[in-house]
Image: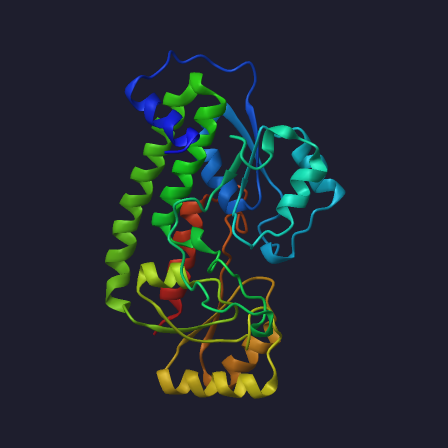
Length: 301
């Protein structure tokens, strides 16, 4: 067991006297989904910000001077890990903040302990923007969010052991809320199990696996490669063959391509974000999962 997890485990059995820290821990998350989870786990003991905005494509983030400045005073940096955020190491170095360097409690890799999907056997850039460790959009499975919360709670407890019990209790409350909601989500989704979908980008394997949807084609011929007319015709064939009723796109994806598919097939284009905060600043991770699932079901005949 690593040090952060050990600290949290010990807190569960030997809770220290709770003392408010001299100041709140400053937590910076790489994107809004992690920000929402960290805010719920940290509660009143933390302030949490996100490097990217909810409507921004997480693939396009860069290590810029403004990111260095945001991380410079951070106590904690929560990031996706893997190879989704190749800019993250440069951002940490550019911040000159030793608290959030790799290996420090203040550097929380949210992917630790997550079982990854779609791990390529022979990764090659010829196949597009392939992620060599597996698909990195793991936060879209609510059960993986529980692992993320555990990682965050362990890191916060290691930095602020006097509040370890608070982080443990907040993490448990988050887990109970997600599990309760998930039971309802699954109950309402079961009648639609194996419903075929087309997605623009391969962002949703964890989401579709959890809720029983089936992706039959992607609008991109390869990850992060603009679709050609020939590929769109192949997608149209797949839509007809599988009787697809919904084409999923994220807010920043090409509307022309998905509208073309809709015009040619009668399928509905459903725009969903993988990040909370697109509808309101108060939108939580749980709200985002609820809205995305509901939007898909609402578009089905």
